[in-house]
Length: 284
Image 1 (cartoon, rainbow, N blue to C red):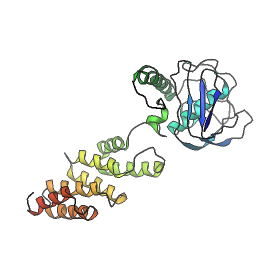
Image 2 (image 1 turned 180 degrees about the vertical axis):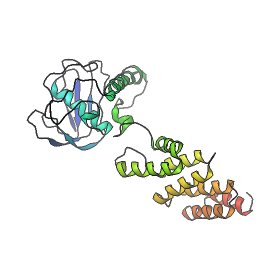
Image 3 (image 1 turned 135 degrees about the vertical axis):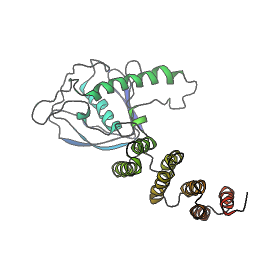
Image 4 (image 1 turned 90 degrees about the horizontal axis):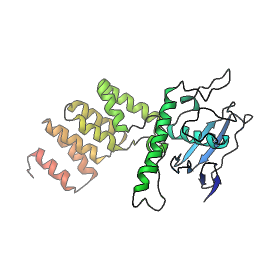
């Protein structure tokens, strides 16, 4: 399903017949790449650029130099093809373009060696972190599985620049601007990332956020549950949570309605039946 090819400082493997066209200064401005799993190892066997599945239209810069300067993590003798391949893995892992870390221009030569942009130094630190995780920690595990799994950019980033979970994004938004900010941020992220695997847009993340908010702000928590039910109207967990919050706030009618809907979705569920019995005066 794949083949090894030389990468100078270490081997690369492309699985499932993934192809990569050569890159030159005369290359077309766009090309399409389908890469399933690409691993690049430094001489230490530590640095990994790993893609699970990436279907992307990748811009090919017209002024990528043939020789590189200011390399502080990658080997100085790395080939142009190898380095460009690694950079493409980075852009796919973070869902960004070359200009995220490098100075690129439309009206003059690009300056890839410049350190003007802060994300470039961050990238160096992240590369060192990956090297340490794979080389110093994962290697110590007694059982790494049949495939000797290693981490890469996409392991945490999953196609987004900041590797935050949806729970974290929602919590930060609520802290900054209340429920309205949370709803706006959720819709923004859903519009941009839904279906791409970067965030979990299933019912559980918003349910966890609602549970946390319920400790201090029942109204905000119920609003989050309703937002979740807008996209997941048959989420038993959300209906149960809505019942629990309303029951705690002594809104008996609303709690009963929520529990009854949960019971419709899960007939005979003992936990739901007990919760409904408590709010209707039926005891345990």
